[in-house]
Amino acid sequence: MESGGKRIRSGNDKIDVAEELINALTAAGNYLAVLDNMIRSEPSSTQDRLAETLEKGVSQVERASVVARRLHGLLSD
Image 1: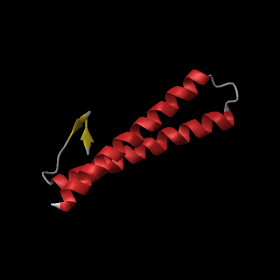
Image 2: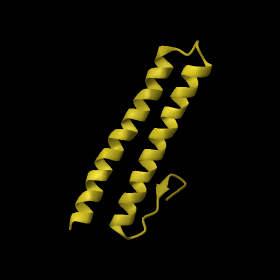
Image 3: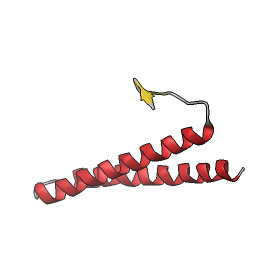
Image 4: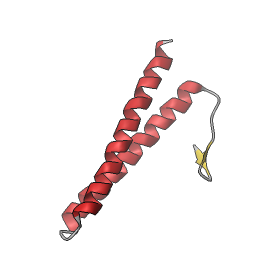
């Protein structure tokens, strides 16, 4: 969870990592949905805006991958 831009930790590493993974995947999905809407409804969207939105989505997927590996490590212990 976040409050005022500051992350509140539960004290349970597994829960915290799972929440971080959920947040990254949600953010990635949101960026990709925005990109889809831009492409479908704004034919005049500039390539720069499309590329920036796509880059943000890719970044969140990469973040989710890193977090998933951390979660796997925690669950393997």
